[in-house]
Length: 98
Image (spheres, rainbow, N blue to C red):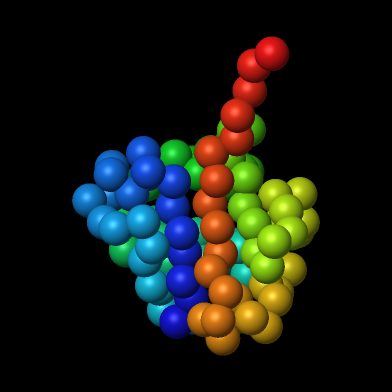
């Protein structure tokens, strides 16, 4: 099981707690985790990725094991700690402004 930590506004939208557990088919990649998240919680479709291009939304970041995975390939395998459920995959709303 992959543990995913969601920001408050998305966990509230999905009607779940801050952390959810997902079963992922095949390799655990950003793409497979986000696919499983959107299948399990359809209300989140379009909030993390553009529905047409599947590209990450500009103000959403992904972290694994304390590292920013936002610009990694969506098909790169996530770290073993995340795959094994010891560490969560974080979805973070980026901040902007000056």
